[in-house]
Length: 78
Image: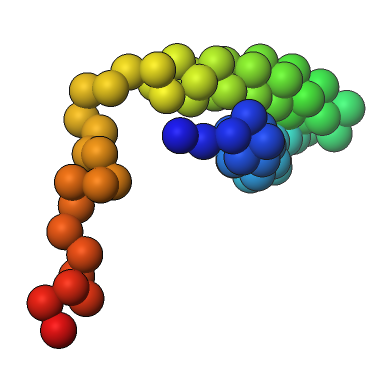
């Protein structure tokens, strides 16, 4: 299980990288720094919220998860 702080931090760092690319592409395509910043900020906010919601949704789904107690200890046979 992840904490909300970890999910938020992951979402923020991921979206900061996306923000830089969106700004750069917006600037190169339009030739306007102001429009590039606007596109980048809007994209950042929308995708940050959706990424966080997606992460928290998947934390509730048990499918595909392993119970940590069922994983053998690699050092146990030594």
